[in-house]
Length: 361
Image (tube, rainbow, N blue to C red; front, side, top):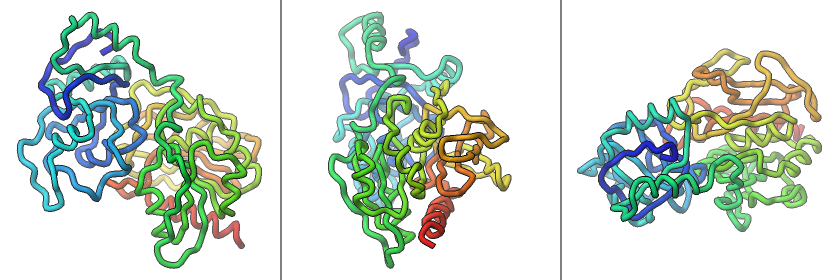
């Protein structure tokens, strides 16, 4: 760790060395979706669940074409794979993908350390030839997450289309900032033809697909580095908008709100979020290290009309959603597609369709 804390263990996955921001994930399931989530680009992920790899790896559950985590830390790797869909072990999968990992007995101590000291840079080294002091210095010279502009590194280079399942009802322009495969699928299930565009898409690129609505996806990096010009033009044109995770942060910035880095972030499938309009509490899937700073409990002015915080994290009162009061644009900080579960927030895709339907009327 960059503060000098050292953990020893045995190799897991590929051998070698790797650097990244050290974070932890509290999910007890869904490790395959976690590994292939582009939002984890340049992060070393430690799993707090004690036993990882039980169900192996299959070819149906990846959220993208590769593993994006920079490194992987587990407590006790499963010695046996047991699932009817599995075609290889997690250990073999990590080796195939070149992901350097480690199994340590101290994942609880590591998690407590991050909660007390905050997320920080770290490195994993298999049989290093240098002394620990030299390895710590190398970690300290590795890139930090603050100020990192990473969305374009994980986004598609070329546009592609996810066709509607069944009757086509809407056309959606989805700006890929690190999109997960299940997200356009959830929209396609609701009759949306989804045109997935590169992170650098201009307003003209968005309008070229004649969208009924515009979507901004999840993604890695510091939202303060991203250009929100296209999103501001979308909002100025009154086009229905929906954003999740990184897209929520960019929506906040487009509204004139600042973003900030959380101490250790929210990552897992068990985060309680309250819809302030209804009082309903959703258990939600998260993966973010930054958040929007916005006033809670009262509407505020933006260049596009009055807005409000729509959802709040019950653990720390972090902003988990924003919306314009006229109803044409909204976002959430969590992942309603939740391929590994839970599915409490799936209704948000229905809300997006309702917003587009009203705009068509």
